[in-house]
Length: 267
Image (cartoon, rainbow, N blue to C red; front, side, top):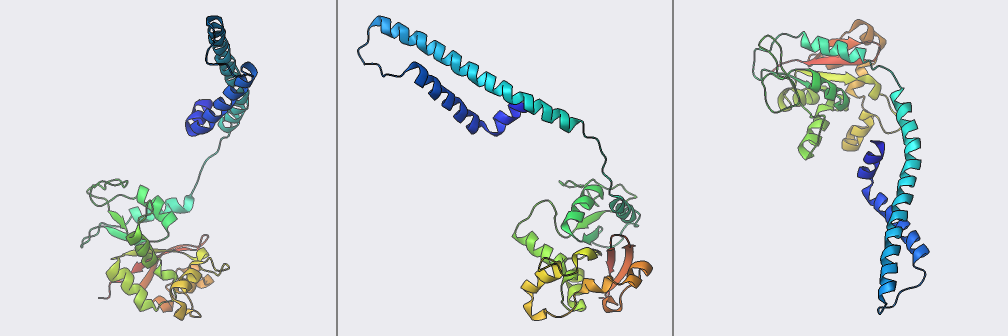
């Protein structure tokens, strides 16, 4: 199996190896070129030599593959011997919290979530959609809440890249009213997931620093996500004054610094 996969994955390389072996055998059997006018005995000798030529080429190739398969089998046994488990307890708790939400009785009927792409990938595969449609999401039952997401985590295009920038607005240095307006009226978001570990400066790679490339005139202002990084907010789950009355903290994971903000419907 391992050899077959290798041949399928690197078919050109295997063809080149075979051609190289043919060239080596050709040098062994044909050191001198034959004239066009050869006698019958020479033709028979040529056919006989060709037969041995292909036999030797095939034998060398088979031996070469057999030599390689020994190491491949050792690697397979090593991989098969690995046993372990995967656990993402914080994500499981967050998924359970979303599933516990009551059904939404207004249009749109789905609870709409914005947040980091990596996390939305997990949520999108585990939280049900409000109605069945061609999607990787499971369909919700009559007594379950349905969910939708502002930025698609599994593929991208120009529109989705722009929506992702909007969905990450909580990491920007924009005025809180402007960010709230984006979530409330542009994206129609109900919940914003914030992971504060991506908020502190990291040599130009944190989300606020990336927003500085888009909004250079706002450099020097505090990012909105920084208001969630105090010990009091993490332990008590209080809403920072800078986010009021536009957002409300409804879920906190103290160990990971993950928050869920509800986008208040002021207008």
